Length: 79
Length: 223
Image (cartoon, rainbow over all chains, first blue to last red; front, top):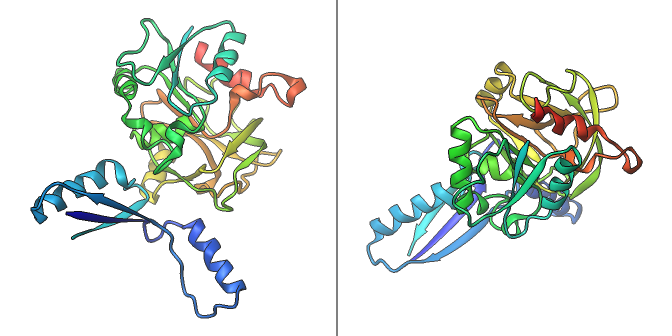
C-alpha cells in the first residue's frame, strides 16, 4: 500500500513561504488569490495490505517524526 | 568545569564551542552521536550549531532520535545542565526538552550578522553574569530561527521567567529580526536547567572580532 502524507503549518501559524509565493503571484498579475499555503508531501510504500493497520502505523509515524505537531497539521491518504 | 560537546553528521560549530570553553579555562570532550552515554563527571552538555543531518525534514528533527540524545534526555531529567546553540536549540525543541518550535525566518533569508539582544531574565544558571535589561552584541546565523509558541505556552514562559533573550535595538527595545513571537531569541525549560538560543555566544569572545559579550554568557555556567 502507499500512504500519502501532507504536512502543513497549522491554521493561525504564519506560513512565510506561502506568503512569499502569494506575493509573487500578485505581482505576476494573478488576481483573486485569497491565500497560499506551502507544505510538504511524503509518500511511503508499506508492506501491509490492511488499510486500517497502515493508517494506524502512518499516524504514529506522523506523530513521532514526520510532523512537528507544535506547529504542523497533517493528513493521510492510503491507497 | 568539564563540558561535553555533541557532534552529529552536519554539526559545524563543535570546534568553536570547544575553543570557547577552553579559552575560559575549562576542559571539553566531543561526543559522537552514536554514543549511548555521556562522559563521566561532566558539568554541562552543549548541543552546538550546524546542520545536523542536513536539516532534512525539519531542522533538528532527525538528530533528536540519535542514540546520544537519549543519554542527554536522561542527563537533563536528572537536573543536568544542557545548552543548545542555534541548531542545538532546534534539536532541543524537537526533542521536547524545550517548549515551542523554530520555523523558517519570516523573510525566508538566511540571516547572518551581529545582533543586539536584551537580557530578559537572569535568575538562571546561564545568564547570571548578565544584568536584566542589559544589551549584548552576539552574532546570529540561521534560516530557521522564527520562534513559535502558542498563547497558552507563551503565558507560561512569561510567568515562569523562562524567556532568556529578545532581539533588540541598542537600547533594549524589541526588534523584529526573523518573526519570532515577541522577538524571542532564547528560552529555558521550566526547571531552568535546559537552555536554548539562536545567537552564537561562542562566536563573541574577542573584541577585535566585533564583540566579547559571549564570554559573560558562557561564564554563567561556572557559578
